[in-house]
Every structure is written in structure tokens, then in C-alpha cells.
Length: 292
Length: 223
Image (cartoon, rainbow over all chains, first blue to last red; front, side, top):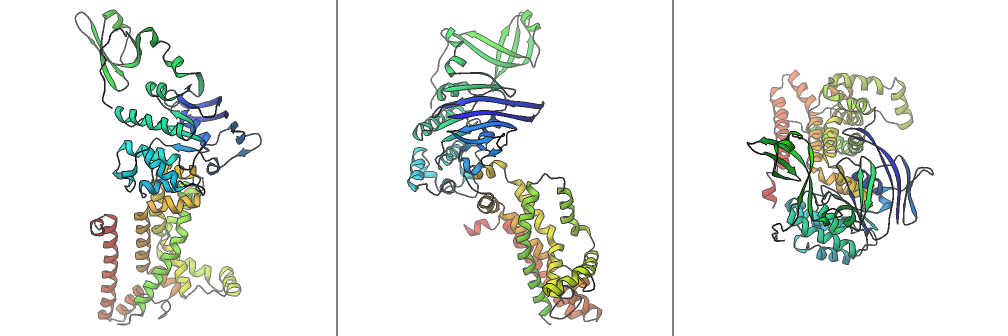
């Protein structure tokens, strides 16, 4: 079990912000930290890994105190032995795939584990390549494999799939799940992708401006509304065009610009830059199968 | 032509570069990580030899290490080291004189390594020392090569500092640049020209090799 009770003042784009967390994560769970940029998600992972010192509080992992401000205890990064996948993969550029994995070996790591990982992540053919010759998805597979070489109890994933396109994301989500199950890890993932969260995680913590504002199972947290048969998306109004009878809004939803028709009356309430919720009935929409 | 000054020059440059390499790595490492208020002071001190006339540096060395002064007499009495008009004195002065040429490229190289790569190594349980040797330094080979070559070349080319602190003792402190000056004063233009040509050719070749290697032109020949 991971008991987190930490406080840290962060300097963000909008001045300073107090990150205040109090939560417990059961062993073997796959949990997700969800929330807007600057909410303190990455800082939370960094504090768990020991890369960032908290201001105060306690961090207890499996009964061992990793951080305790009252007793001035702070276990070094090296001794925590967590697995960490960085947003930019952080592969060592001067080493081949195999050398990257070998570097992560602890004294008691068996070579068979490396072979097992190469096989599990389908990296066998790439093992003698340097990172610069790999695609984004391949790099991420190496980073993922490398993070579990030292057989960590905890795996921390900082938006590992954010830079990849949908098809590769989908495939890598499978690898994530496989790694989590195979090595019986407690995994903490940072993600913005609701589909990914629902697919992978047992539990979700929703952070905003340094505070935990909601938590629960992903189905209850995200799907409660959609069971009612509606699509709901949040987006940003980019352009409002006033036509003769109606107005056309261009709304940015994730990375797609969608044109939506509304009445003049509705349009007058909106301005470009407004954040809006777009809701539509989900009865009998067109559904196309995508190739994986 | 007497080869002694040339051999002495390259011996001095070699010894200086080796010692400097060992000293500069920790200095550059500290500077690249530090956000201390003292950092600008240290950086300014390291960079001073870039702008200070070499004679100024040599002059203060002469004063500091003179056996008539506290430091100089302590060194000669307790450690038996005489730094004035001796080869070890030239090495010490050259190390300080060429310090920025070794520290700057290494510092720039280390600062350029992405933070997450270093952190990834720590997370894998590797110490700072092991991370430096196995992750950081291997990644900045071009910077290391630049530092080594620039320090070497700069030491080969020094004149003012050497003249002030080493004087002109054949076989001990008479390096090529001073020998050239000496021969010109004695109107032996042929000998001066011979020394100069050798220095010219060697320094050009060294720099050419650096640019070829760092420009990756040589990569296709190695593969």
C-alpha cells in the first residue's frame, strides 16, 4: 500500500500553488491521475520517485517510510527503486536498445528477465539499434521495458503515450496492461485520454490546481453521464460565423475542429475563446471500425 | 635546428591537458548543476584568462611563487617545490591559463543533456558518479574532444605567461614560442621560420582533425 500525505508549494505559470494530497493506493492497483496541465500531476509522481522533495508530510510505501518531514527522513532516489517512464522517453542515446536495458540491471537481475522483456515488448529485432533510429512508439516500448528491468514494486508513467498517434496508442495500452499484470506492479499513470483511463485503470484521482477534487472508479467518474445516451465533449470556441438564418461555431475538441450549427440567439451568448460543453444525442450514430 | 624547444612545448601541452581534463570535469559538473549565488563569481574567475593579458597572470604568479614571499617560501621549504623558472611552474601557470578552454565546452555539454536522462539513471539506482561516467560523459564526447584540443593548442601557443614565470632556460622552460622570439632577436630568421612552420603545420592539423571528427565527416570512413 502507498500512503501519500504530502504538501508542496509549486511555482506555476499562474503564480504559486499549494499541492496538497492525501490518498492511499492499494497494492497491485492501476490508478490514474487525471486533470488539466499544471494541476500537480507530474509533481506528484516526482515526489513519489524522490526526484522532487516535498515541503512536508509523509510518504509510506509497503510499510517503509520513504519520506517523513517530522523525522527528517528522506530515502534517496536510488534506494526507492521505482520504475519511471518519462514523457520524453529519456533513453540513453549512446546505447543500443539492449544496452539501455542492461544498464538498468541491478546486481541480482537475471539476464533471462531481459530476454523475457525483449520478447514481451516485441523488441527482439530492434535490440541492437540505437534510439535515434527508432520510431516514437518503438522508443516508448523500450522505455517501458527498461523501467521494469530492476523489478520495481511501483511503476510511474508520466503521460507515456501523449506524443503518439491513436493506432499506436491503442497498441501500447495493451503493452502497459501486460507489463502491469505480468510483474504484479502498482502502477500510477498520468493521462488526459478518457478512453485510455477507462480501459486501463482500476481507480482515478482527479486533480485540479493542486487539490484532489474527485476520485472513484473510472466508469462512475467518466461514464455516468454517457449511459444516458449522449455524447459530451468539452471544447473551445475558435470562430463564430453569422449566416443568414443560423450561426456556425468552429469548436476545437481535443485536436479536431468541429463545425456546429446554432441559432443566432445562442451565438450571441458566446465569444471566441469561450470553453463550452457540446452535448448531443447518441442515438443511432454512424460507427466505423478502425484498423489497429 | 634544435628540436628541444618543440619537444618541450608538446610535453608541456600534454601534461597540462591531462591534468586539466581531470580538474575541469568536476568544476564543469558543479557549474552546470549549481544555481548558487557564488556561481557567477566562480564562472568569472574561470573565464578571466580569456581576457586578462597573459603578462598580468604571469606577473602575479611571479610575485606569489617567489621564494621571497610567504607562499613561495612555504612551497620550497616544506614541499621542496620551486615553481619559478621551472617546468612544474610552467605546468601550474598553463593549467590556470587554459582552464576556460577546457571547462567551457564540458560545462556547455553537460548543461545540454536533458534532465530526464540523468534522472532516469538515478531512478535506476545508479549513483551520481556512475551516472557521470556511464551516461553523461559518453554523451558529450564531442565537447570533451573540443576541450582537450583547445586546451592543448592554447598551451602550445602561450607566450606571455611562460616568459614571465619560466624565463628562457634551454631544456627547462624555453618553449617554441619563446625560442622563436629569441631567434628573431638574434636575427636568425631561418631558424625562427623553421620553428614557426612546424607550429603552424601541427596546430592546423590538430584543429582540422577536430572539425572533421566533430562534423562527423569521418564517420563514413569508420563505418
